[in-house]
Length: 215
Image (cartoon, rainbow, N blue to C red; front, top):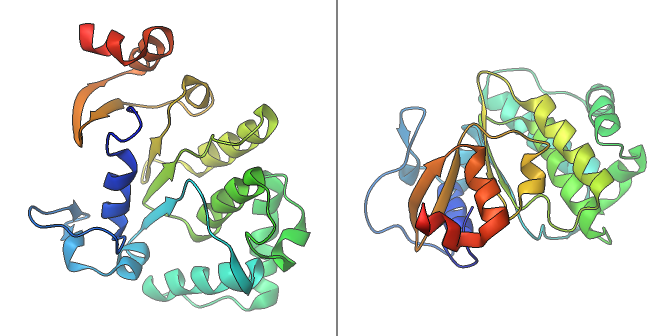
């Protein structure tokens, strides 16, 4: 959590290797490896996933083809056999049901003509299909009505295990009512200035960031 411009999204993009940012020092160790030595696609195959605030459209590429290729790339990394179209369809359909998404989504081009809520669901569908050891979810609650938020939160909760983690960026406590955080970190000027439990979010909701500074 943190004010606009505090560095939350920048931090996340740097973790996944966004080309707009250059890291001039330090290291980022994930599962014993320095992420700075890895290309973005290598970080993804190693188990990093990021959902964006404003997912982009990819004209001419169907969701089915995009998801199938991404999933098989991860399976190749894990030395597992790839899935053909029919096998993949059987794999992805239950995940569509979990998010209350129609199978018609598979035939549509990635995010093309999607509403804000549909794009957010589609991002979580990608996470559900590909899997990740660390999923970074950047304001997945923005633009969602309460029903869509509950569906997305239910899907995220269903993906959590003892072997993976989720890093969520949000401004609002309402998301944390559905996805219970273990820790809450508050960022300011690119640094974590406060760490605690859900009580931090409650204090922010009542008194804003001034309330945090006074604690």
